[in-house]
Image (cartoon, rainbow, N blue to C red):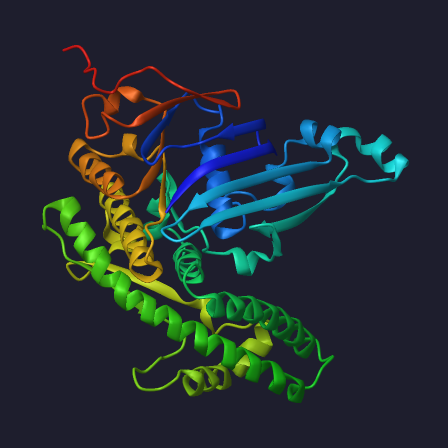
Length: 399
């Protein structure tokens, strides 16, 4: 799969952009704050239906442009082996009509953004769109997959599985709603404003959705573990043995469906949950353990080692999506090559060349001169514009 055309309107610092990235590797270079990451953010949004770094849609809208035109747009035309996919995410801006509020808050007056999605001209939902155009995003923060909190590793799993399993995404959405309602009830129980019998329904719903999520995570991680181990070996010349283990908050035996185990854990922790007013057992408390030669990386991995393991997990993600979707995902590398030593940089470039399309950003073109990306297409990013560049990566730095 590859992205044939990207259209942006009032997205971040792009007032208007129409670009056709070629197949193969493309390098986008420019100073910081020119729009390189914004470009990759837009492409990734077309894959997972939301921004990877914004808390809400308002943050991605170019306010000045949207005020005059009333909307923002991210649209991409993707080519697969069998079809063309025209994916459009429109963000309609609904400005406040209260004149007093606007006068008081000025440019800070809040507005709502209504998201409208279309796939090949047909209205769609975020859940239906998810994973139609698979992509894998590499960023400098991937080190958090190793040394960061469990939420980072859960997010990694949720995005990965949701791109290949829509039932998982639906179950995850239902689980979040159930979790919220159950937590509200637990708070009422702690305050003596509800009865324990009212928990029965929410317990049943949480067990049903939670057990399914846990089973999907275990199955996906069994494949990711093998793929990540292989990728790490290629990045480190086979010096380190990586183990990727699922660490659910409730026991999950190989033969059972997980529902009895999760129900039992909820029963065992019932008194503590009512005292705290929150649910302390379930997929929202799961983790993934990463071990090198039997040692937990969260505690003992060096920064360089953690970065390499994060890289191996992303390469494993790309291989997993290729295996299950039958299409290579678009690779998005956001200024990660400068963080790597020459050997690992070469390994990543080899992976990029093996994919149908890779979009790579960098501040420093010099690190790529004379590299495997010598024949890549080069684009200069400057103040929300992208133009082809005549710079050649075949040039080498002076000694």
